[in-house]
Length: 259
Image 1 (cartoon, rainbow, N blue to C red):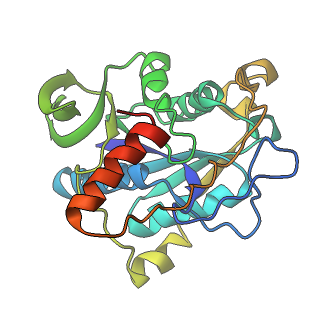
Image 2: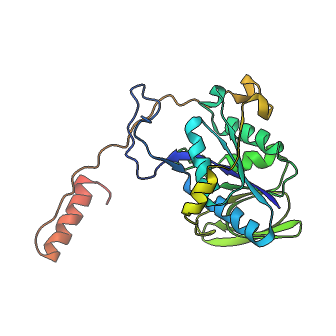
Image 3: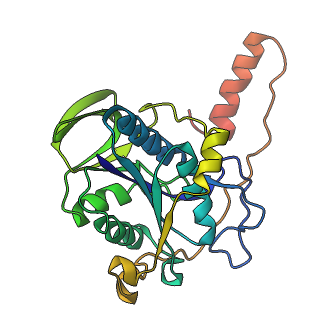
């Protein structure tokens, strides 16, 4: 089987974010960049399928030069090769432009059996790329997968919905997005890290994925960013439980005006 995994590089979820002076982005210096956690589930699932059924795992990302480190992480985990779509025209790519670039890169890998993505990229949290990919590649798609069973020519996918789970069957190839709980991503071994340095990463620009400047241009523009307001100080209520309860009710009624 040939399995394609879409990967996004994002700031470490423990990063303290600072708004850039322009006010429409974040300060990228001193940020620890990582593979989006949901994409790690997708990589791990691809590797498990490869180990069970044979084949190859190819990673694809869109991003600047630094995004190559995310690909090396996936290669160290066990993926076989990667494609890095990098072009100045994609520096401000929104989900639509990103999906177009990914779809163009994936088409160069045809025939393939399965496309895996994280359900969303931590940071933007748009959750749009998997659905856009399914449309652009003219493939069925199943989102927020928590269990995946690949069989001959089809996949059985258990997906998470509010308060329950449902099971879908789809023909392959298909696009499946991974949710937390699908698996437990492995850590790269020292041997894997060393081997990753020799694995091929193919660079492509917008022309290489069949796009022109208009198709790569974002339709969505971030005009302003701001951090959440500071939380007010906590009001500690002293005294006996009965007195505390009465004071709490008074505060909720007179100050917060919620009762």
